[in-house]
Length: 284
View 1 (spheres, rainbow, N blue to C red):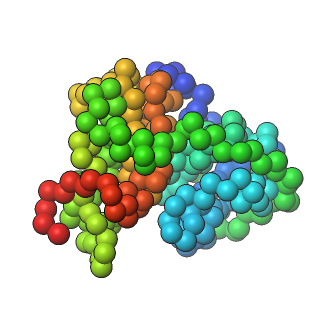
View 2 (view 1 turned 45 degrees about the vertical axis):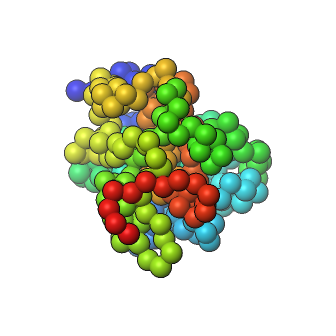
């Protein structure tokens, strides 16, 4: 059985038993992240606060909101101080790792990912709550975003076909092939496909059936078998930067890859740039 100690930095994940033992610690705040509040209202981990991806984390154009003041307000509203240990989870695979990346961008070091997320917690018949969790607002001190964890589109463009850099497309095969724009066929002026030369490796391949992370050895083999090795600089991307933020977390913290930056603009941005190349495997 995989133990956290197998990973490059085992401190960044907690298992369901650890969280069960610390559910009511005053310095721990659990955050559920989803696209709709309905699953949260039906049942969530006791004490978890809710963050809506569309209204709390994204701008109207679906770019990730990297405004430090807006982030500080979200943290304060959630009863989180600069020293609070934040435990992130969601119903979608990889959301916790994305939130880990986002909090690291804003300099919040005390963040952990719940291994297996809601799926694992529920499967073990652990307690769930329906009442909304509210906490007194805090005075969260914002920090300027750490842009060293990101890569912007001009550098992504120069990285195309560079041997020492890998563009890693972690979306579904339908998105990569150009059949889908995010989760459905393209509409109107939406352009589909992938960045030329990008390696495709869907993000959910890093997870077991129960939603937990695969072992260090399995993850290492998964990536190195595709030529994604620690000596390269890796730029993961997806649709809006969430799945790629999760992949950044896996590569950097579970495998210890030294040079990984999230292209958080991802396909939402790239497909709308008029001057950049796009490769697609099906007719549009």
